[in-house]
Image 1 (cartoon, rainbow, N blue to C red):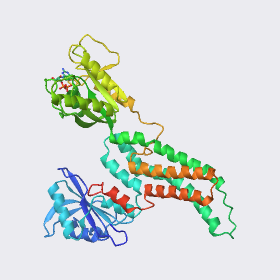
Image 2: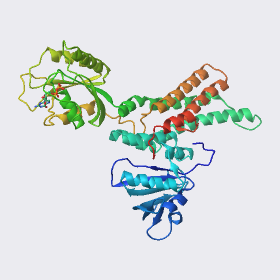
Image 3: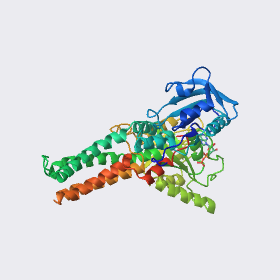
Length: 455
Ligand code: GDP
């Protein structure tokens, strides 16, 4: 959308496309109230355009021919105190996809048009209701796969990143303003500009950005999931454990060794940690070329994994294949050893480091969850919302940090202040891109394209 031309009025279904009790259709733009009055009539009293904001009103929703589509609730929020900053309305209909689609068509007939993906939030951004880190937090909150990610995103929606980087931004702006004031108004009685007096501000700003950037490694692990491979000889119980962790039958489980020839990837939340689980073909010397391919993939997966779960069949004696599995696992960053089939009579071997589990009865799964949670603990020192999870944001912070380090180096080398100032202005631009103070059309387009329609 071009912010210079007057915006039109947009509408979209905001809720999912499955059957539900309630579904929400939202409208935003200058003609919202007039359009709503054309399609919705309250059971009693004045039309919505003459009613106060944020009150739910029961009424009838009509199609373009005047037939009743639904008996539902409507509410309005006039700009600028609304999500988008424009006049907005929401219809809370019965959640049939058909009813919602009809409601939308009725709004189109009354003058609205279909909103594009992310267009509501884009308008909120253009109207200064949200900055870019908050807009991205909206996506993260909708996509959150664990409570920890949701909590971090909610705090970022509340402005956690912005508050932190704004302090840095304001400090750097003060340096530039002072410099330009002295330069542009030499006759005024302004305190002379001595760059050295700002050395501490630059150092503290760099330290602050560096602390923020340090959270990104953990943040991307938290958001994208920990690569975790299930390793074990054929029939050790890998597919069964995968299914137990996922809570449904994803992998094919059979009693024939070597069934899982391909690798399977699934996400599961284990001990509050998002795991990207890869089930592998059993690691075993084999003459079957198809199966051999699977074994190679298993070794590759172990190499790429952060966590290897090694499954040793607790109902069978240990053999050389288990040793091969244990040694392949060593290339992962962390290894947890599981003694599977704990519900069966145990074979005569012991290993103090093995966690007994049974995919059949669920025994030991809580201990496995606790062990995974202990390997990837949340950083208690970093409050919710202060963990960077977004590569675009991390890149902007890293660039700002590079500029600040260059500014300090230049200062230490004793170059002219304007060269130092150029670096500081580079840092300001990078921080501006982080929050959207500096609007770059390509960046904003990329961000809002990731939204779903209706948000
Ligand atoms: P994979 O080859 O390592 O993937 O092993 P599977 O998960 O396919 O399991 C091999 C066999 O062991 C199947 O017959 C499973 O039903 C059985 N099995 C797996 N886990 C358990 C368990 O916890 N208890 C019992 N009793 N049998 C299990």
